[in-house]
Each structure stands twice: as structure tokens, then as C-alpha cells.
Image (cartoon, rainbow, N blue to C red; front, side):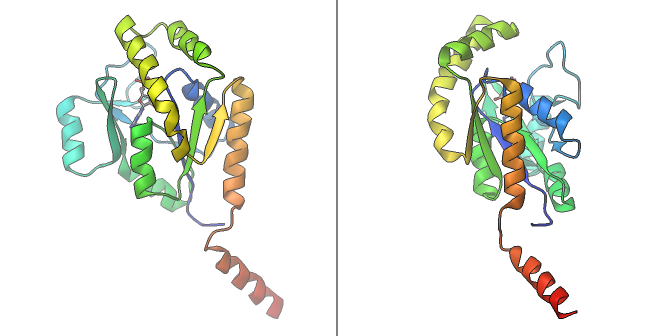
Length: 206
Ligand code: 5GP
């Protein structure tokens, strides 16, 4: 009902499959924009600059913080990650929906600044499944894997701060649920409903 686009924030512990869900959602919904985060983490073999992340060094990241160019940022597993503000603000103001796939610390910062965002938490069906998924990814060292598993246990209680929870038993179903959430949010009545009422009243006068 509003002219602004939706800000959809997806997070959840590592290994929940949120990356796969977001990728499929972006393929299915052509006008949804992905916010490409900046990170100090090194690219993985299948990642490229500007597509998965904007890979920058710590000094560049600090400059972005000091110049207030980040909507939020956090240190996650020894690396910094942040959402460039300008892209998100510009797209939302143009009426485009924007997807952020960010960690919980970052999502809470966004919620503080932009509570009208749609906050979606993704969980795996069980902790056993979560461990299996992190291991099968094969990209983590033993230390990193243990860190991710430990954080997952701590992060689960933050689900209370979100608007929606999706249990990812099956990716296609999880994507459908996310699409349904977006559709419902677009039909939600906001203060902009006054414009709709005025428009209909004007039309009735003719
Ligand atoms: P990965 O290193 O596996 O790509 O990401 C590690 C974690 O960082 C994931 O939970 C991911 O959602 C999160 N992340 C990615 N981009 C951002 C960002 O811009 N801000 C924050 N706060 N977290 C991010």
C-alpha cells in the first residue's frame, strides 16, 4: 500500500540454509534486489567480487564505518560484515523491495533504525541437521566449524526479536513461505491507507 519498497531481513544461525533460500527467492522474484554486503573475509573458491560480497580490507571497512556509509555492521567469526546504506535507502525509496541476508547482531541494528522492516528468522529442523549441514559444506576449518555451532546454540533465543520464523525442512517449501510473507506484508494496512480512502472517495464523486 505504501510507495516504499519492503526491507526484508533474513537471518539465522550458520548452516540453516538461509543462503540457498535467499538465492532461490532472488531467482523466483525478479524485481527483488539483493543488498551486497561488504566484508573483510577472504573470498571462497566459488565467490566473486561484487556478486557475493564486496571484499575489502580492514582499513577500507573502517573508513566505511567512519564515513557512516553502513546501515549496520558486525564482527562475525573474526571478520567484519556490513550493509552499505546508500543502495538500500535508494532502492527502497524507488519502491523496490530489498533483501538483506545478515547475521543477528546486524539484524537487531537494522530493526532499531528501521522497525518497519520485515524480519525473518530461519532455523533448521534440528541441531543435528544443522551440524550435518555445516560439515557437508566443507568450507570450514575444525575451529571455524565449532565456533559456528556454538554461536548457533546462543543465537536461537534471538528468534523472539523477529516477525516470522521459517523452519527449513525443505528448501522449496521454505522459499514458498518467504514469498507468502512478502505478499502478505505488501497487503498490510499502514498509515498510507488514508491515500487509498481519499482516492476511492474522489472517484465516487465523479
Ligand atoms: P559467511 O562468511 O558464511 O558468508 O557469512 C557469515 C555470516 O555473516 C552469516 O550469518 C551472514 O548472514 C552474515 N553476514 C553476511 N553479510 C552480512 C552483513 O552485511 N552484515 C552482517 N551483520 N552480517 C552479515
